[in-house]
Length: 104
Length: 231
Image 1 (spheres, each protein chain N blue to C red):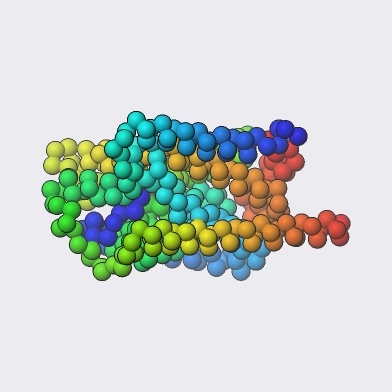
Image 2 (tube, rainbow over the protein chains, first blue to last red):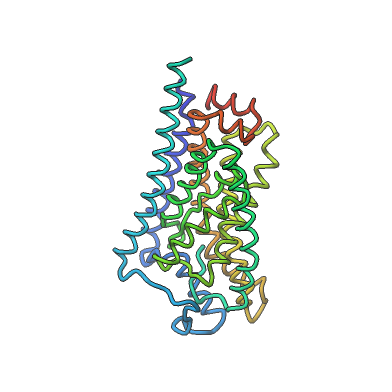
């Protein structure tokens, strides 16, 4: 039955490998601030167009989370909504399979 | 992959909206048709959509000193096709632009195209090519998800390059420049995402192979083989 968990092992290895590479590269590049690639992309836009970053104004006014904490909270909320749906469905299917096994 | 609010000039923002709206309309039409034909498709839609919610909320640090989101769109593109995936992405991106200042309402069209249309379409093409070959289902899922994720970022770079061609070298040179930020950060994330979603697909195959067979996601023999002796 060991063969049955190949994919699980691969997934864990990939995640650990990813973390290892990340830790190693972050220890090399001491000053890297791990800004979002969106932010880095915006900076490149301002470089290429020669317009300073402050000159970009939203075309449609936008609410911004007042702090990083609020933002991460809302991101967690989004993940939680997804997690609840996924967990609910897997439970539902598991239940269905159990009922079917009992009948059949 | 979000293009921030105000970072696309108005004509480009309007153009991408005009491309995105028909895709969304078609997706909503397909969604209604599938759900009225088969209510049991709804839980599967919940799982694939749920993973888009989860994965796109994670901002993962990558090797190049910046952070980026996985997209999670491949699974839904396999099960329901690219345009239903666009609808789910539109919901996620709307939430992020309204409450998180990630992307904006004017750039939402461009963001829907990159994450919700281009990525899933590319993934779906890979899926159609591999579906009836001897390639194992999990390997197919891995390829589709990794490609869908990568193409999303390639297209974001392209959208920005079109709007901001470099003074020297034009669109091509600024495309390469944006690609350097987005796509390279994304390669390790795409690989991890592919493996994780292949694992999720394994659980769907184990728990509910009937729905995958009924929606003809993969040929029946391949699903049975995967469910019987999962590697």
